[in-house]
Image 1: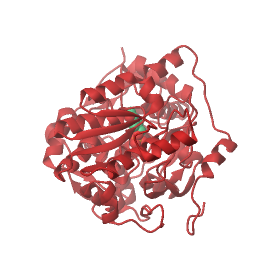
Image 2: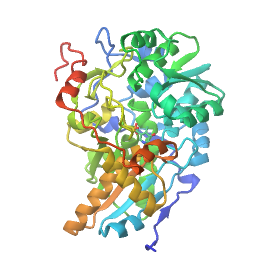
Image 3: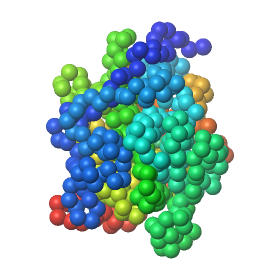
Image 4: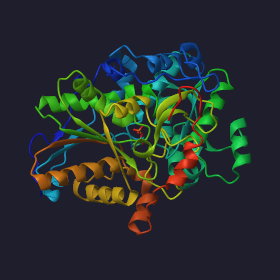
Length: 461
Ligand SMILES: *Cc1c(COP(=O)(O)O)cnc(C)c1O
């Protein structure tokens, strides 16, 4: 047996649950670029944004000044069902790797939805309810966000309409059924229930769908019915703000035991878990109080940070959402169909994009077989079956720990374990059967996506 000394599993008490989210933008010297209207290219204000999003969430989206945003009591009550989440020292993994590094992970998979997404879902449902709305619309890819949102909507008695990327709808029937059990309606996207869905179906008959396309449908559905707003599970600054409960709890737990991380690692899809984990630590770095290495890990088949352009781009295929300045592969980019590791979004949080451009965070990409090897190793020695998305962070944490083994450095590594892999067994099956293939897009593949990024004065890339 591997050793397990104190601190092994750090559970904070309910009283230590954060009372406010942290907004790192307030401390960034270079703020993320503002959202633009996709037609006029003018900056979007609160009124315009409030037509798509709940008003309070639109305010959070535009808030560049308040460092702290109080967490309403009803949200804290819901958080207490599954938070604070544990911070765990990976003693067994360390021992197996033979590394002098100390590895900690913050586990967000201890709730029915199975991932960190519930942290933002409950906040978004709360503000929708408070505004007196009837319901919300959204998209979901692998299904984690739709599941989290359906749980949150059930709690507050809101109608929840989910557009689910068609290939996931077909491949992940159990995710779909969880959502329906919690009362959501689930439509495979692209669908013929929206104008934009019909247009996409006409242009690309037989398409298996994409997140960008499901977003367009969900936005249209929200705009075309009174009492509905659109909500999103990643990419937006409001989502990243809600996810800072992860980083704040991790910081409290580590501070309590006098542990100071050197390297902080997270997987990056749209950037919300990574941003939520690192934000409070980034605050310390920006104030000159401490230094950390931050590493974003993304799939080689969807490499927004490592091979994307830093430009204003559409957030969706149908070009109905605001333009955001971010690292992007272009809104037409769709990762290879055999990619099963998640993190498929073409763009990246504009907060993280700015921090990356300012060289305050690093990024790397990894192939999916490397990711599943790390997932298998972690599952066998640490017991938790990780989500494929989370396993990108595991891969990088193992690689950093192995570097320490070579150099003898006793670094402390913290990574975000964002969720469980129970609903990803088809991907594990492909891996276990030796049928998983890596796919890295060629320059020509990427060029197709880049060609879809809009050109207008000031948008040079
Ligand atoms: C959605 C998801 C991610 C990626 O989303 P981010 O916004 O980049 O955090 C990572 N892990 C899991 C388990 C997810 O469900």
